[in-house]
Image 1 (cartoon, rainbow, N blue to C red):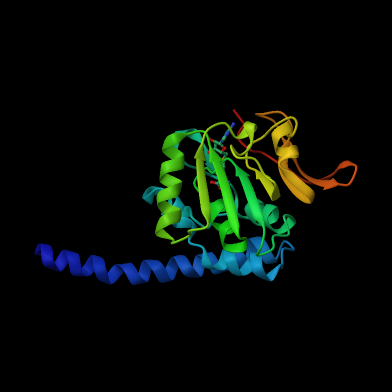
Image 2 (tube, rainbow, N blue to C red):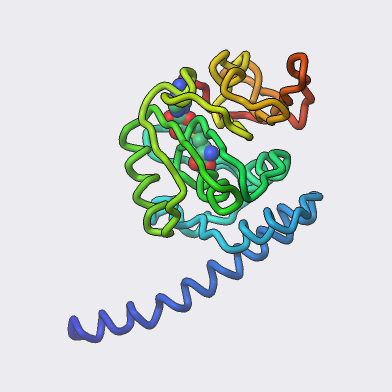
Length: 225
Ligand code: SAH
């Protein structure tokens, strides 16, 4: 077969692959998200549109819509779709919200936040992961994201206030800068507990006189370093 034939058969395969991945994505949304009780239309619609395979290495493309976390670069993970959906749902995002994300990772969660709010400020400590995530998010033409490489435990360099804060790495306590950068009435969601153990995904709300906290579900995240 000539090189030209090869190229045209490659090109012919691409729409088939895209169609198969779209079917898998819609099945994931039905079976892993809606069937488990997440019916918020904005969250469901965004998850049905966002191609998770873009955030994975080619070798993992067939796993893109499987019901679990997957490895990303540097021994980190891309979270299970259900956990991403649950965190996004419980944030109750509104189109005018400013959101702070700790732990950009692959950028999959960042993309959903950007699709559902006004502005996302995201912090990642691994420069390589941050660069790869930024590349994916720019290819998706998401322009309402600010990136920072550094220690998320210090909060956003220019301060808040943020309407919502989402933490994607396990910590025993919410860091003080997050609490002070959350506006009154704001929500913070973080996996609280020891690294290398089960944590409790916890929702904190800033009230007039301090914080309330509510457990959401048991989970396992990589540690905040
Ligand atoms: N939601 C992400 C998963 C993030 S995994 C996704 O779906 O892809 C957690 C991320 O937090 C990792 O990329 C890790 O490098 C990052 N991280 C851990 N400690 C951090 C810290 N102190 N500051 C910023 N990022 C941190």
